[in-house]
Length: 168
Picture 1 (cartoon, rainbow, N blue to C red):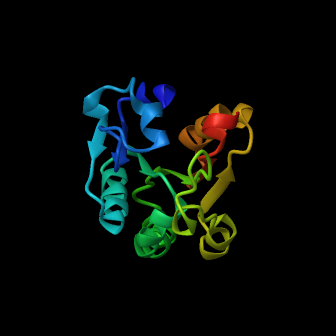
Picture 2: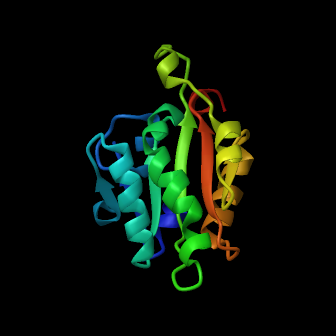
């Protein structure tokens, strides 16, 4: 996240980005506050703001700590962000990085509404978004660097594993 934060166009958006609350919060603790946009629990609004920020030339890193929360943003993601390049991609080419995770089951299982993995379903629902599962620590930096550096007009969803914050 520190690599991404060095660019003047990046902004981190979501819940628990400015304040602690999820395992992903710890990955932002060294990021300057002016790069963090804390939002209330309003997932669809967050994804709409993400697209608006990208249309304005920013590179938003939109954080949904668990896939189950990202489900609330499906309309914006599938009907707007995924279709944007098809509808208007010649004029504006938004670059969006979406960060989500498969909820951790240890040391305390948060119950099944927090541990879903919807990667395959989203691959079927989207055509201009690449989904990358981060299975090994060595995969993390190259995947985020690819998402940030890409010039192919695709946006990226990076899927982390909550349990790996402790295990790997």
